[in-house]
Image (cartoon, one colour):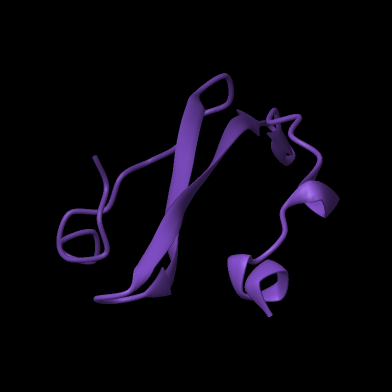
Length: 66
């Protein structure tokens, strides 16, 4: 696990061929939220996102509850 809590003191090297999960949290503390994840392939020229969930189908709950 690589976290911003200690990554500046202990940097990690990503090499071509590695697949990493990039995770974040979206929401309000104490109310609710969701953890989002993208699977990413590290390539020689950068990266390629492997996740295939259609992001346009993600709807904020507040938009539904109005």
